[in-house]
Amino acid sequence: MTQARDRILGRLRSAQPKPFARPNPRAGEPRAAHEHWEQRQEDLGDLTQRFVEGAKSVWTQVALVPSWDALPAAVTPWIGSLSIKSAITGREPRLETLRKHLATLGVDVRRYDRPIEEQKSDLFGTDLGITTTAGAIAETASLVLIPTPEEPRLLSLAVPVHLAVLERKSIVPTMADFIRSGTYQERVPTNLVFISSASRTADIELTLAMGVHGPKTLLIAVVG
Image (tube, rainbow, N blue to C red):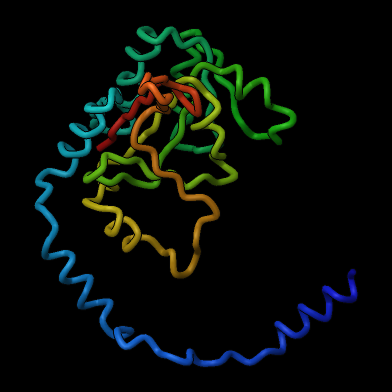
């Protein structure tokens, strides 16, 4: 089996690339097509307002926060109203002040910094998961997360309540704008996550159920 695999891989490595038999006659047109698409897009106006209105329309709770220093005070009302007893973050330095503040409120603050096998009970037994974001799309009111070793995906998936901290300056009009603003040609993320609301699903009778495949409640703090 190993020899057969080595032969196949050897042929693939030594093969010379061949041009397409029928080159795409429109290969030189993508920029013109993109410009035409841009001209047809609606003016979204104030991006923050458009994002917040869209998020609130699907029951997401949003707080506008003037700065990172003001984040702990802005989050405090949610801790009481949602009866948060425990919270977990990754290793994001910008959340350290918030972690300390939550501890003063009596919240059991945990850190996801070990293999999932060692922290499964911490993750699935915690009330609140807190993450930062890579940006947001105003048109669809979608958050963009790029999970990393510092902030793994389960922080926003395995908890009943997810708090996402979004910097106002990272809100862009459309998905195309977000893709264009990144460095995806040089480094493609292994996991790009778009979140437009808390987890929701419906059965064949259209009975809505919240929190079946992820957090039941989504909180967004827009900083800046």
